[in-house]
Each structure stands twice: as C-alpha cells, then as structure tokens.
Image (tube, rainbow, N blue to C red):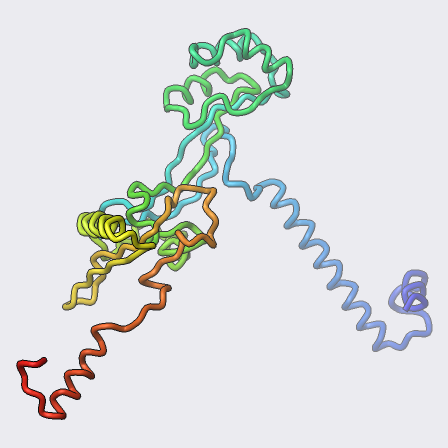
Length: 289
C-alpha cells in the first residue's frame, strides 16, 4: 500500500507499474476524499458562523429567533408558547468606558448596583448577567447607550402557562408528550396545534384526583374523560406530575410517567360482559345480574 502511495505521489495517476484499472479506481477514491474534505470544511465554517446555541446577543434587527407553533386547548387557551425575552449582560473584557457602563447600570438598578461596585466588577473581570428577564424599557436603555461590554442577550424559551395541569399531555420539547409526538408540525407551522382537551374540565379532574390520592394515601392515580360520540379526549390527568419548565427533573423520574398512555393496568369492568354472558347462558334470573 505504501509503495502504491509513493508511486502515485511521485508519478501521478498516469505513470508507474500500476495497471490502468487500479489507477482509475485510485483516482476516483482521491477525488471522493477531496470532496468529503471540502464538505466538512464548509460545514465546520457554517457552524462556526451560525452556531448551534439558541441564545444570541441582539445586534440591531438581526435577532436569532426560532419559530415553534403554540399548543392550545379546544377553547384556544394557550398550553405551550415560545416567549422571547432578554438578559442584560456585562462582558468585562469588551468594556472600553468603565465609568459610562457603571453609570448606566447604576441608573437602571440603583438598589442593586452602585457605581463603585460595577467599577470593581469590571476591574476584577467579574462579569455575567446583570439582570435576567429585563423589562422592555431596561433593554431599550442598554441598546440606546451603545456601550461595548454592556449587552442585551436575546433568548427564547418555551413557556407552559398551565404548568403541572397539562404536564403529561403537553410534555417537553424533544422529551415527551405532544411536544415530542408532533415536533415536526410544531417546527414547520405557524398555526397553533389545537388539542381536544378542555382546560376547565381538566382542572376539575386534577383537583378531584389530587383530593382522592391525599384522602386514601395512594401512590398515584389517573383519570380520563372521553366524548363517546366523537372519540375526543376531553380530559386526561396522571399523578404524580411535574413542572414542564423545570430543567432539573430527570426524564427517567416516576413523575414523568404518563399512566393512561404508558401504564399497564388490570382490566375490570370489561370482564362483566363475560360474567353476564355466562349468567344468561345458564338461565340465571335477571334480578341476580
């Protein structure tokens, strides 16, 4: 192999003792390797420029935003929605006018940051977030100042207004529930994804099931309500539940387990059909069943 490589290196693809067929194959292999190499270089440059992080500083009107459709119940109440917010960050290594930066931060947050404290942070390179989820007016003031090192970092988060109430049904992006099963639709569409569930009935189910679990000291439980005429699911509750906005919850936790959809439970009333059939077959009087 090394002799072939040395021969190609010194004489190219047209000379040497290697037969023509072998040289053609090596030539194709060579160009395929070059094409792959160029492709990976291009991909690396693209990722280096565009990045893969969903948090980007706001630079003028170019804000990095990912669209994801809302999830709503049958009445249009929002169950999941993308929310754009912004953090005010201090990047000490880019600060050119420490006094001006310190003055702006002090004006925005007089009870939290004195001018002296901010100057000390800049001097000792202790930057970071000055204010998370800053208000519109606070972000506007920072943008208006145009001071290097004092930035507004635009972020986008998935919010779940109903929190635990629909946690098992809606789930979390890329993990479970509707967010997982309908991920392609939610990424590619603007119109909300409407579920058949009703928030009002879901709330009643949740309260009653929680009370029953507490009363009987049960480990968990679930409840479902279906429209028998249409097959629509009106309410579905599984307990224990979880907060879909929590990032610390282990996906393997028992709280993430959706009992109605993934649980195995014994059949109960379904067997009454067989009991009734046997009673009728043996002529047992109607009043006994």
